[in-house]
Image (tube, rainbow, N blue to C red; front, side, top):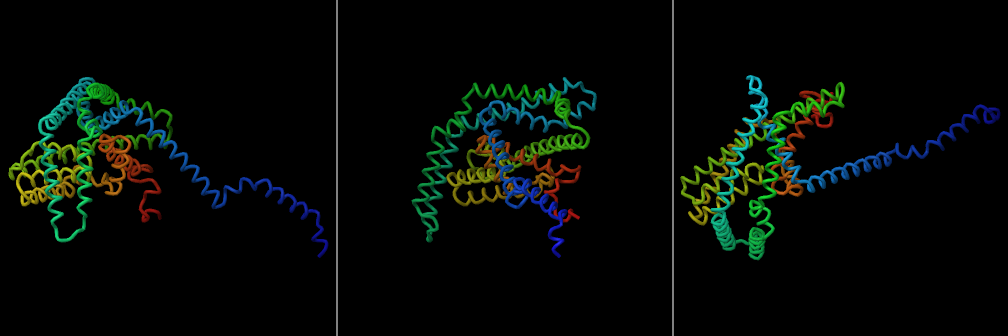
Length: 383
């Protein structure tokens, strides 16, 4: 068999194979498991850096980005009204002006109601809630079992009191009402952007879609339509649910003769735009005020009313008004609220959930009108 080992053709083939391996060796490092892990790590780092840059830009330009996002959401919410008037032959400019004036009247009315509640009755509401919290702490300390130490309760009470009475809270939540310059600038910018969104929104979207062709264009159109539908339905549904919650709790508070019923109803309406957390905070405030003014029995009834209204909202109103396709898991909502609060404060907390719902809606139609993106499909559809 010596002739086989000395075959010149085999020697040449082995030599070429060695040279090929030597040449491909540096690139082959990215083909194994560690190479793929390294590639994914680099991709994740790039995504994190880009996301960080976007968040930094949003925080640096909140005077522009927040009115822009709010105007977009309001335009989506009133898109059915604009479409209906255009189908009835109303000139586009006249329909835009009528819709814009309606929005401005609604926002101005809500703003005046909020200012009235904060200016005239916030101090009484805060005093009642603080007194109720103190009574609750005293009642817990008198319990026969110590699941919470008294010093922990005192520390929590002092922390909440210091935060609410601090300059930071005053400047962020209450004194912000007096920041007339920034508010007026943001409101004027909001109205201006909203006017152009209502008037030329479809044309603006078509302009942005010019670089897309074929299937990518169809997908982009589908994404745009879904985003408008989800944002509009979310805002209209949430506003309706918030109004029903506020009216229901207001009627209960008036029947029970709980003081400060109207400011509490206003807070219920506002906090309803912050899912889960808002309803909890509103219920706690109403119960604390009832505890001070009417005693523990009425306070328990108020808690029952709040729970009943929230259950009716979650099980009947939201599925009918907003649809099950936009329903997000509670964990996703809490994460979105946390991120939104860190990025944009109270406004970020309000906007975080509708933006997340719109993003989930986009994923649901990524590959077709009723076909989610591949990674988001149930395993039963992977046949």
